[in-house]
Image (cartoon, rainbow over all chains, first blue to last red; front, side):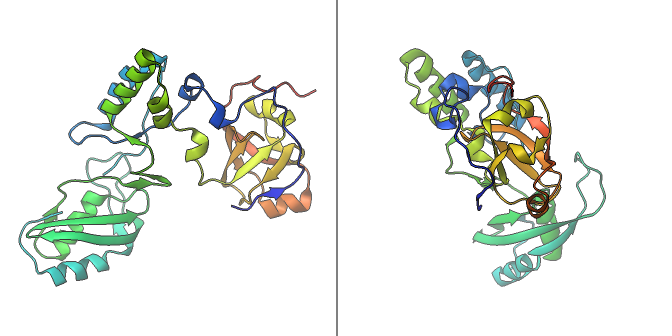
Length: 69
Length: 220
């Protein structure tokens, strides 16, 4: 997509962080996983298994998107 | 797709091509949406393999298209009946099977490697940043001074915009910092062209905020 400059200005490096510089803990606060769900279990069950594993990192919430029918 | 009787290959191919384009579907009995007939677009149907009564095909469809229903309708049109045997999603938006796809076991292994072996390589690979996924929405990059008000739910004014993609009125836009961080999702109150004529006033209504307040300083 084309980018149009409106009022260009620099950003203050003291605040925020570029996505590629995030630590794993920072990434884990809001990340997306492309899960290869095995057949035979529901998306909900898969999310529960993933949540159990990821809770070791302090991840409390997990969800999934897009049901397939 | 499992056909209930064998059908000549030419016939299968012919009927498949009839189901490309706009189709009408009624959601199945066991569905979460209102059961009224609705139109969906089948962008492409590609038969990969036909072996006796089994047909393996790839379907590129509009969201909300029921594949199980599509298969039973194709079966009916073929005059023999058919049902869905197996279904796999190979793509949604820009997320494909080759984009950091992982199994549940691989997630567990990646966590083990990170916590026990202090190797974050695998975990880092499977946790994808939202900025890399939401590439299908136009972006509006905002000045540092505008970030905190957006985090608190304020509307975005023209003065807070540093650069932008073009967008239509009422469309979803991704509000992004100048460090390319995902700040919020919003809806355009005006189109890009209208904004460029007015050059003032509110442009985006903030809808969902993802960045925590006070990541950036309060505007003085």
